[in-house]
Image (cartoon, rainbow, N blue to C red):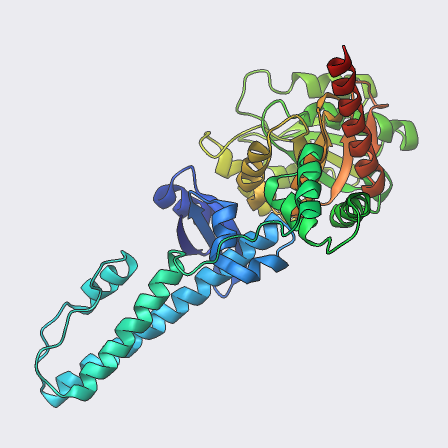
Length: 430
């Protein structure tokens, strides 16, 4: 796993650097504003299990994937700072030796830095001649940099702790049947220190419900500008249609507007325009002549604006442009990721990493009715920390749209698991 830090004056410029130097497969670990611009920490071949191993015991405090990525980024920053201080000390030693007139046979400072960062076997050339004091100091720094290099490559990490007893093992298996990932299932099962399996199961479900965050207020009552992002086919446009229909039923059509940023696909706006005509709601399109901010300025008198987006990935043309429009808007756009409950956990996390630079405020879970189990979706929102605003469980507009609450969602997941177990029992009996 290769981790790298980027600095730029704007988010768009930083994303461009990431794309040019790391490629389309780079994962964003963290982003923050710093003096003079923004800082992004990225990784190639990011693996959550490897990240936990590198962090060791510190990873126990990471209750979700978002926190884990931030901790990984913080560790990288600290190690880079330590390496920088070590290089400064080496420079000081060499300058002292140069002033003292002592001979030094070794690599240049630039070569030395490159060797350290490239994990060379001998990052510092041996000294010849001079006093033993300088040699000892260089040897000490050589050991220090070697230790830091090992940390950056994860050599000092401890393996993940397995479940310690049979009850915890069985509990972890049941949580995986529920749909949770093996890591999250093991983490929850380890917190059950003793007692019966049923007690541990109830305790784990309570912790899961506590870890699943939901939005307190409904968008329809609160108002504002909301953007839905996500891959093609996740249900963004249909969900906007459900939200718009429910809003019109409650508050009327005069205070609602629909906007789409999808100018990349042929006939991409047709479904949204159909919703607009049926509900008698204006639909605006972001294009070369009309920026997102200028359209939102015109719609400032509307109580609610719903923004549909193109389902682009990091390899698609227009991906960075669309993210920048949302992230850098001077309007308070609350961007939400649309996640299909039928997606594999890896795909969910990949989509989250792809769109997290849009400053995600939460998520919407779709296609609940089509998912075999709900643990994958619940585990995803728990690990990423994204609050769930709504979930959908069918194509009916607007009936199949529901305001999310943690306990009912977990209960629905348990009912789905019981249904599967009953079907398996019937099949085995037959």
